[in-house]
Length: 79
Image (cartoon, rainbow, N blue to C red; front, side):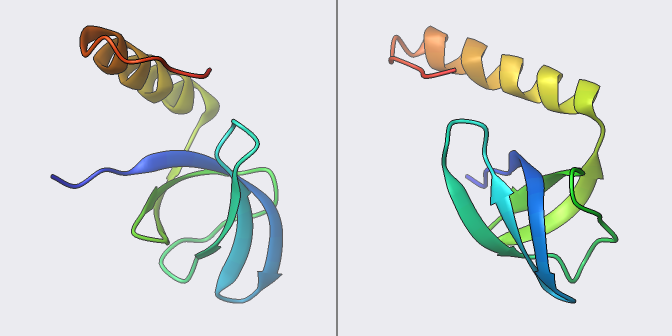
């Protein structure tokens, strides 16, 4: 199964890389060569690549769906 996770662009480092925040204090360096983004944009990240730009409402809906899935599995969830 593949999983893509929303993240916020915190700092663009160069033409192909940025630091993102996954919303729980976790930040990572990702590749942004597939999308056109600016600091503060939200993206969908898969395997270290930003694959889609998202708006804030899409991010909220996606995180809510993740939360519902996790609750259905009876697993604790931070968020």
